[in-house]
Image (cartoon, rainbow, N blue to C red; front, side, top):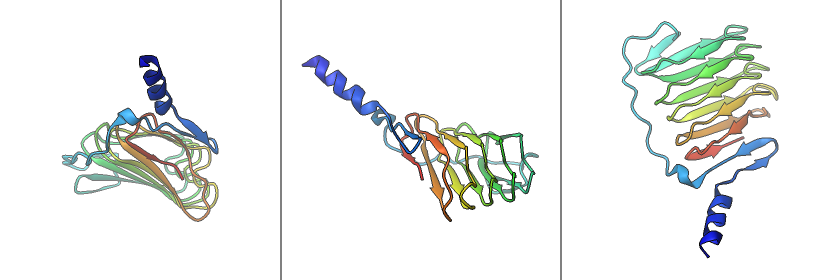
Length: 170
């Protein structure tokens, strides 16, 4: 009887795949809790602007193409990619403890992006035509809430839920 219970628990922790998107909502991730409040401070140079404790990074057409965006450690991070290839093939390293979001608003503005999440809420919003986020990956962190939103017929990124407390693919 003890072995049967272990098998049931292991089966409950497994992920499934729907439409090429991986879902791994491990029940041991626990309930989602409120995000930590980022301390903020002087607006860091990698930010286009800051709104209180949120670093805003604006990437126009080809603006952040083929780069690595490293969000500042003591801020929430909000990245907006507008125009073709704005953030194409970009790697985003979200803050370790705070919220991080990406907004992709044009054809191929976030193509092949890899967004590595921290423990805060982590999202990717695909608002452009069908390929605003084509080939992209949202790499969730164990414990934090993670999700995508797809509007205007846009296809979403693949999502690696990795034990996030909640995980919402498009």
